[in-house]
Length: 113
Length: 116
Image 1: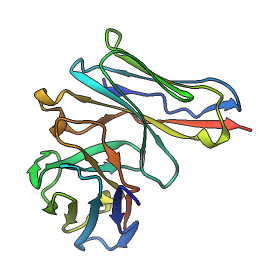
Image 2: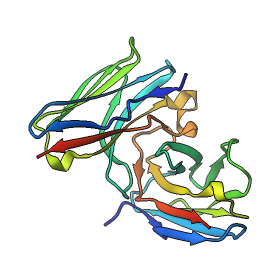
Image 3: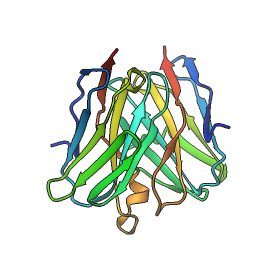
Image 4: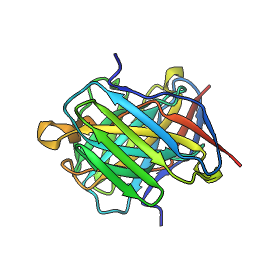
């Protein structure tokens, strides 16, 4: 069984559209994260979410809105997609905010046309 | 100065060689150190996880942390072609200083090629 799974794996869409990416973890972890990997392969934190409570990363545009229906799921909704949003988005989880390490999903490859 | 520096490579070595990968960092608040392996079109896979300074060994992999020098290393013994991948170092502050909320700080990754 995949510990952290993301859907879809690939997402191709037009500029200006709204899209969502879903993430689920079956590890029983309390904390989940979204990371962005840009074209230069650099991974950077976007959000961390602990037990359904959002911990905001202020460098992320407010077009990006994470939502956690329960602590096993963390979805990422993106409004008004821009060309610069093209990247690979990774979901990760850890036992809780005080614990490491983090375990990653296989990513969602978002391409904006 | 970037928080975490890592040579992107590529680093090409013959099969069976000992591989040495390393990262330097500038933030002395980092307490937890990780090495991830990432194959093409896959997510980062945790290899090694260490807390503070010291060594940790797991099979063919050894991780070293020298906090006084702000330098971490990953050694791979008896390297195999299947070890060819990008290796990412990552680190985070202690939770009592907000580390969990920060998320991991990554190096840019070293692309490793093991030649058969």
